[in-house]
Each structure stands twice: as structure tokens, then as C-alpha cells.
Amino acid sequence: MANKRTATIGEYLIQRLHAHGVRHVFGIPGDYVLGFYEQLQQSPLRIINMCDEQGAGFAADAYARVRGLGALCVTYCVGGLKVANTTAEAFAEKSPVIVISGAPGVKERAKNPLLHHKVRDFNTQKKVFDELTVASTVLEDPRMAFEEIDRVLSAALRYKRPAYIELPRDMVAVAGQPHYRPRPAEEASNPQTLKAALADAVEMINGARQPVIIADVELHRFGLQDLLLQLAGRTNIPVASTLLGKSVIGEQPPFYMGVYYGAMGREEVRRYVERSDCVILLGAFLSDINLGVFTARLDPGRSIYATSEKLSVRYRNYEEVLFPDFLQGLLGGKLRPRRPGRWPHPVQMFPAGPARPKAPLTVRRLFECLNAFLAEDMVVVCDAGEALFGAADLYIRRGTEFLGPAYYASMGFAVPASVGVQLANPAVRPLVLVGDGAFQMTGMEISTALRYGLNPIVVVLNNRGFGTERPMQDGPYNDVAPWQYHRLPEVLGGGRGFLVGTETELCQALAAAAAHQESFSLLEVMLDPNDHSPALQRLTQRLARRI
Ligand SMILES: Cc1ncc(C[n+]2csc(CCOP(=O)(O)OP(=O)(O)O)c2C)c(N)n1
Ligand SMILES: [Mg+2]
Image (cartoon, rainbow, N blue to C red; front, side, top):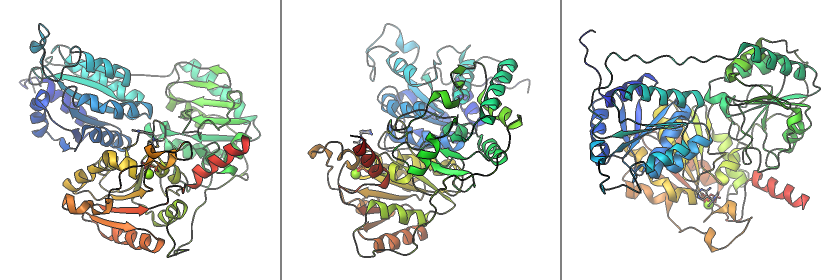
């Protein structure tokens, strides 16, 4: 190894991404990043060309959610600024995406010339991403570049948030620091604080009449699902998830109750959680949508709140305690096992055959039929809107099989995300649920699925516009142009399209889509613009009751 030449900055970045499990990089090239694209092309990483940078952003986010780390690569500003929104979503929902952007060379920047794609100054894009990421860097110094790459990657992995790497084009092929070795990131809890926090938490839980666990997204991001299963299994403390954390443990364990979703969720789950005298929030985000648009009633005085960023027991905060250590500590601690009690269970199954074969489909029946159709190898990928609210009640069979923008709620996530999901794990088949409005934003990425031989089943909920907005305030601004979504295969030169109006047609189309493995299937499901999912109906009813 003594004569091994020092890697170039671009090569080192590729090596480190690969070492962390990345195998695909999503993006669109441009002249500021072509040199790096050529290096990618020669590397074990596969470039996935998307139709649009925003598509690359959502795909990389979903890839990261499934595989633990994702990467995208775009050109300066015209490409980079288009992934600002998707990076914001990855930040808000804790998904470690590495945003790599080409940029003008360091030498080109002298005297501040007016180069193409520049906005205000050369740092504009970096400053934008400082706000949207947990760490950012411009690789302008070969002596520091390798260290910087490792610093930024470690931060993304430590906090499960996106990070930004800007690669000036004249640095890509420059050798970095010779004989450099990455240092393993070392982090540990403060033992005294950990002990005190655990003692406090155990005392509170053991003294409680009706403790309950709310399992959220960080358990998934840190791969701690098994610890949770053991904890609940041993103690018989029942578990609810949030919408963002739905499917963290799947719906099958006997102690699982369903999604706690404030007034949008099932009444019995809401009542059980809100009557608890000890709510143990694990890896949870206390956001409005995640908890049912501000209708959740959780009292910090009755809560234990543990995440990678904060730990509190009632009103006491504990610093320097790592989330996995706390969870492990609870498991090893002296929590008393309880006798299995009576708590709600997820609603499991629905009528097998069509209830009203010829009647127009409703949102409720659509989701009931989808529930019966879901198979073990499917991942449900939802977009914002009724797709997400309706899917809250789906019965997910195993862990980690539900992805949706349940917190930041950007439209346009689902179709490109399905590309990321299936590349991250080719053993699964995405079932994409997307509104017609959201589809018009990024739905063209099914062409990317076709290009790379992927086979998502895409259900477009065609309610002729922005359905979820109509009950709040309606007007022509909630309408969208009437596309014939099911005819897209004609334009794209592949895939199968189905127009679905009734339950019988839905069952037939789903069966045909399941059998058609070669490419995507697109089901255009016609719905009444004023028909809504049970979750949205529950919300409006309960809010109305309060007024
Ligand atoms: C990028 C983006 N723009 C606007 C919104 C605001 N918004 C939330 S839901 C919604 C309507 C979604 O329409 P559609 O995708 O057809 O789903 P539906 O509500 O009809 O089920 C809109 C415009 C958003 N969440 N994201
Ligand atoms: Mg719609």
C-alpha cells in the first residue's frame, strides 16, 4: 500500500459515500459538475438521472429513509436551489441526504466575475443550505477536503439530517491530504446523567397507572425498532405511533394500538393516550400534522420525552444522554412488568369482495380495498393530501413500510420517492398514493421509473383538484387542469394505465397491476371532489363539535 497514490477530492467523496452504504446518486448534470459526473460514472456508484432536480431530491430522501444515507448531485444554483425544498423536508423529517453541488472553480472566483448561474455572490447557495442542513462545506482547500468530507458525513449520520457539500470544479481532480485516515466518530453519554435520567424515568413509569409509549420516526432512523419491541414486550406497555412514525414497528405486535393522531385519529386511541398518566414519547416530533393538527392534548408534566436531541422527564431536562443509550438503559433497568391490560387494537381487515360493485368509488372504499390488496413486499409511499390522511388507517404488515411527508407535507414527494425506495431495496414494490394536484408537480418521474426498469403501482386520486383544501376554503384556485393520467403510458412508451370509476374496476385494475411486473402501472381513480377520507372527516366533525 506504500506506493498507493493519494485519492483526488472527488474520488475520496465517492469512496466515503460507498463506505456508508450509498450505491446510487440522484441528479442532473451541468457544466460545473461534469468532471465529478465522469468520476461517478467510473465508480461503483450508479448515477440515476431524474426528470427534474426536485425529483432527485425526493428520491434521495426516500433512499436515505430506507437505506440510512442518500445522495444527490446537481449543478450550481439552477440545480442546487431546486432541491432547497426537498432538503428542507429531509431536514424537518430527519432524513440524512448528502447534497453535492458543483460550483465555479476556486480560481475562476478571483475578481468576482459574472459567471453564469451566479446569484448575488459565490456564497449565495452555500448560505441557503446553511439554513437547511446540519453541516455544510465548500471543498476549496485540498489540505482540509478529506477531513471536511468526513465531518459533514458524520454530522448527517449523527443527527439524521441532510448535509451540503459544494465541489468547485477545479478541485474535483486535485489530490487531497496524503496518508489521511478517517477518525471514527466517538460519542458517549455522560454516565452520571444517564443514570440519573434512567432512575427518574423508571420511577415515573413504575408509579404510573396507565403508561403508554408513543413511537416515532427516530426509532426508525436510528434502527432501534427491536429495542422498542423488547421494551414493550417485556413490560406490557402498549404502543401508539404517530403518522410520521407509522409502521415503525408494523401493526401486528399485540401491544400495538394504532396511530395517535389527535382528533384525526381513531377516537379510542386518542382517549387511551390522553388519559395516560405517563406518556413515553420515543424519538417523537411534537408537530401539528404529526399529532393531528393541534388537536393532540399531551401534557409535559405527564410525559417522558426522549430524542437524539433532547431528553426530559416531566419538566426536568437531561443533557449529554444519547438516545440509544437511554432506550437500552430502560430495557436493562428495573421497569416492572405489567399484566396485559385492555387497550385498543388496529382495525385489521375489510370485506373481501366489492360491497357495491357498480357504485362510484368513495375515498373510504378506495382505502378499504387497498388495505385488502396490500402485500408483504409492498412499501406504501404517500403524497400530501387525502393520500396521506387516508393511509393513516392502512394496516401495514411489517416494520418500515410506510413513507410519507407527514410533517413538512410538501406535495410532489411520492412518485419520485418511489424511485428512491425501489433502488434502495429492490426486493420491495412501491404502492404509490398520490393526489392529482401533487401528481401534476412531479408525476413525470414515473418516466424515470420506466427508464431504470422499476415497477411501482401508482394510484392517482383524481378528485379534480386540491381536495383537502376545499373544506377550509373553496374557489376555482383549488381546481387543477383535467389530465388523462391513465393515458400517460402512450406518451412515455411503456407502463400500463387504468381508468377506475367503480369498485369492480378497482379490483380488476389492482389484480392486473399486481400481475404486471415488467414496468409501472398507473391507476387513475375517479373520486368526487367533495368526498373525503375518514381521517379528514373525523377532524372536521370534532372541530365542528367544539365550535
Ligand atoms: C408544494 C406544496 N404546495 C402547496 C401545498 C398546499 N397544499 C396542501 S394539500 C394541497 C392540495 C393537494 O391536492 P392533491 O394532491 O390533489 O390532493 P388532495 O388534497 O386532492 O387529496 C395543497 C395545495 C403543499 N402542501 N405543498
Ligand atoms: Mg386532488
